[in-house]
Image 1 (tube, rainbow, N blue to C red):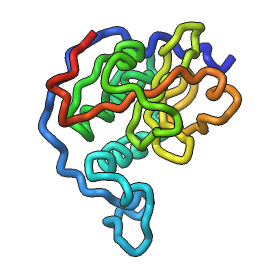
Image 2 (spheres, helix red, strand yellow):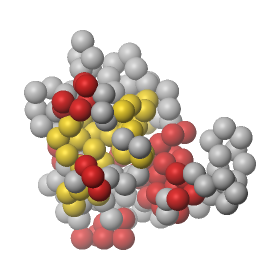
Image 3 (cartoon, helix red, strand yellow):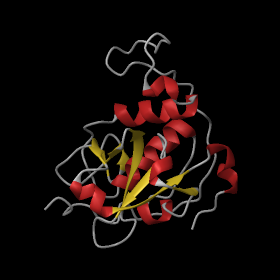
Length: 181
């Protein structure tokens, strides 16, 4: 059963705090070379903060699933993965709980999704029980379940499409105004 390992995606809640920004330059994920303007890509199209977010999330592909963890050395659950990526790339500390994350930021319509938006799913007969990061072209990156690593999935796949609950956009510049639930 696909959702057997997807739980509450974290337990601890914490206040969103502003942390120092990362100085990571956008690089081609295969070659490690700096991105250039000759071949526009999603990474180049996105703003600098979103580039960091996408690069950080994609660098974690394959990290194994681990309930309650936000440590890449141990593994991630869904909210631990999102929490880690947002902390590293954007300097935001999000709650370690998918439902609590769903209360942050502003609601976004599917037609308005942008890379970096949080996408939520009902995977255990409970709304907002799973979270991932939208990366563009109807795809999102997430830590799905036991026995799997961080991966990219298509939101239009039957499994995810039927379980989609909504999306939220976080504004790192407004982070001090976001309150933890």
